[in-house]
Length: 551
Image (cartoon, rainbow, N blue to C red; front, top):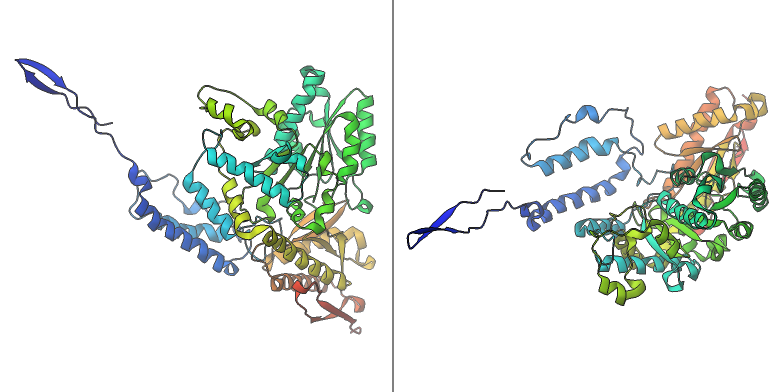
């Protein structure tokens, strides 16, 4: 702050001090509208060029750890550099983008999608520009109420039971990740149960999941104070499509109850990460009910598919669950991060996570007059500071509509079905897990004379490495001792020709590997002729396989 100049006025021979204003520094130039517009256009152009030229980048970069650190200064600039913003954008293009794994690439099949869209991306930019912190209704009334509206919109679009919506006595919030959502639900369940049995028995609380449940659940349980050895990961079977067995859950809960432990929480999954298994929600709720255990459904990936009526049955029984979460940033075009958590009894969430401090300004009159509409979202999550995520989700729903989202999901499901058909048509390969959505789990068979199952996992590990070295990007899973390749179709930019090209790369690399191993035999030398039909017409690529005579 600049010093105040002492000035005096002589009045009848006496010096009278004159109060002058202190010169205050200004930072308004840091948000100058004209400069923002000029630099903003540069960013928009860079993003647009990035998407337009996505095919020029390898999906996964060929870099080694430390590659970027070696190219950047060890300290930040002490003063602003002339033309710093333009120079920084040049570094983004020349240094950062070439070292990125390009999640928006149409050839990115390794992970469930981190979907982007024009509405989602610009909604993210708009929320960043407004830069509100809507932790209470008073802190940002419109942001709070838009979030309440949009979670009900999405819940209805996903055919969720009314009991989970604000309009039915429940409610929802937009968080960052499924791990946050599970943790919030688990803490609410913990506090409800401890209020019944006493806080001293926290060591007796037991939580349940399957061996296919995402590791985020175990992490959340640990953070919530559940003993590590009180987390039951119940084994699944291939013949059950790797879904959690209600009978196995019943046995586990009975054993624990008989031992004096307290069944607390079940995390069921719609669409597991490894194979997209779907746990039978209704039957599992019936098992948990006699124990008063909280049931949460983690539908991080496949929850988006519930927007399509043909998948609605997979959530049958959801009216009995206590909470439900899904990631709209995975498959519903909302850009990362955007997880929605719905709860049947919001008061339990508030009781566990709520806090009151004088410095958190609240509008008492609004709270009294507004009732349920004057909601304070700080009491629905772990964090106080929160982003205006609802804005981009609202824009996505406004701009594409429920039907547009359905077609987006269905297009990927059709492409995955076509990829699955191509795998099945080639006798060298097999589909390992039942496809339910847009993930295909497959592997290369290994003839018994060349090692059979003993060598199959090793062979498929090598195949994945070869595929990923040749322009595609897939991942793997090890389930029930079987190593499999995962082809997850979901990028906004993926089209049918990308899927067809990916399969040709898999076939070509498999053939090259088998030749190198001298494994190819007359029965393993297929000639493959493609009679392509559009994947969008629900047709498979016809693959004709004929044996070559022995050399």
